[in-house]
Length: 166
Image 1: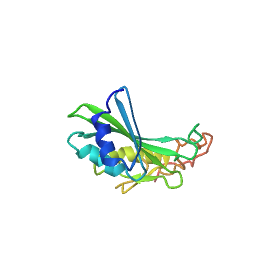
Image 2: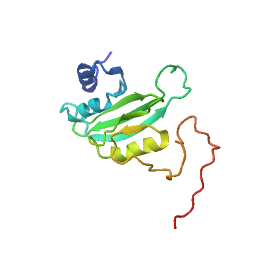
Image 3: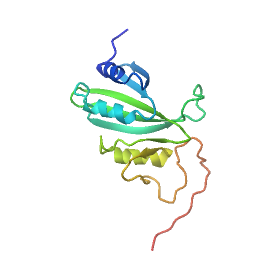
Image 4: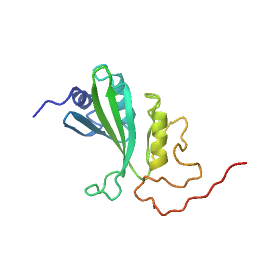
């Protein structure tokens, strides 16, 4: 069995109490953190010189509604893909989010590009990012009802018709 990566070692040492799971497959590291711990873990990933994850490559969401073997677990996961230009390594940080209050802290202060990525996750999945400076739709029009990438969103749902504004 190979040694865990520097990323996994450092995160497990520093955040053992909030890490639910870690795994690495073909050099692809993944860390699942407790809800509410995303901001602290992500800031450490960015600011720790041995990690230096200075690029937020992507931020997305997964809806696990009715997913096999996930009973009793949070419905959503917010997923952050980070890259270090200095060290040429990547990590995926996942943060479970409950359906009852789908909210996680914004990371716009850490990576300004998160502004648009968080708006997209909110628009498509309905996950809120607490502290976001401009949480409004980015892909769908303002009058659109619901969040179209949720698994319980009906594809036959009728949306309000809107015309040009005078």
